[in-house]
Image (cartoon, rainbow, N blue to C red):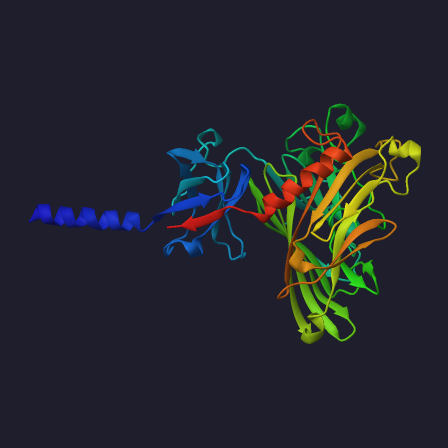
Length: 424
């Protein structure tokens, strides 16, 4: 009798423990003709069997070896809902992973592959009198407020081990660029304001001055045949959705964007992966007034003509050149000062810019004095495109327009053919 009680108790204990973990088989298929390195893989909890416990840790294994991963809360409810990891997978190949969710916090060192080295940095900081620049997760302000100089680094900042970006917190919402010699995380040290001493130590620096141009893939309104900044906005904000060590997602949003007989909300999501120089941009719209009018609404993105207005001495032999194609690629190469107010500190920087927009969103292409542009139209209130850049200063990068332009068709094909993920 006692044996039976013990057996039942043991079984109940096993069931309880099992209910606090869940393991899934994840098959990743690369159908593209080229190998993929640091390819993003997302496993949504909604694609797994019912998760009826609070997930506090996750592990990913491939052939018994730990794969660095991260848990992400994408909807902001305080609970994770995705596991993310990066895969190296050869062309036409298939890899199988074991993904385990657990209700227990697992404190495992990076050397065991539980999280991997920090290859992503994200921050949104405030200026303060003590110069401590506290981190915050969200900043929101009335559209007419000018708090540009109250945000340290002037906006939300993202960095991979390859490149860095920031998006200005103002009516421009321009994407600014940080190029570096070495593949490492630097912005916690330089914070986009690299000193002469840091430059001498080999740190990177801001590499682009956009001015009145569109910069590298900034998203703009399109009115009367030209790009326009976001001036008529009820509320503007920026938010860290999730960050590191392998992926960061940030949100830039404008609520109550107004035009004649038209009001809508706009949410831009920027995603940057470790090992990547390119960044994905997704834009979602919610029209609240003039929904029929919004179906005919146009926007724009593209790249600026770097160094187009610079003199020959500033260009240092890097002639401004580029193109925009109906197939979805726009690119440029040139050289100019990255900050017109700090010419004595920061020398001109040669850079290459690129934007890829899938053809289904493109209405027309434009070229003006400063930019190569796509006029775009959302599909079902949504659009997605990709931005990328290279800095000539990179030790492992591209150092001429010929090299840069030659790489872009492969990049376009790569992002157009993501791996297929099956969860069992």
